[in-house]
Amino acid sequence: SFVMSNSFTNQVLAQIELWTKKGQYGVGVTVLPKKLDEVVAEAHLDHLGVKLTKLSDDQAGYL
Image: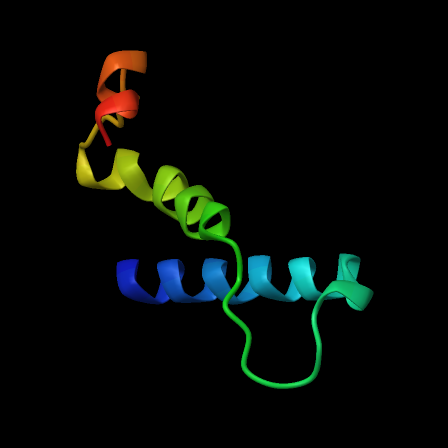
């Protein structure tokens, strides 16, 4: 059920993205923004007992 929850959440967010930004995406296979995957991951972290940390400015600058 956890995998299905991730999958369905991804699908719903993708549909919302495509519906609210109709002119931005053409017909065909489209790579959606990475932010949508991050929203799904954040929504499911508690179930895994995981805490998400943010990179410091120095860490982000290194990347």
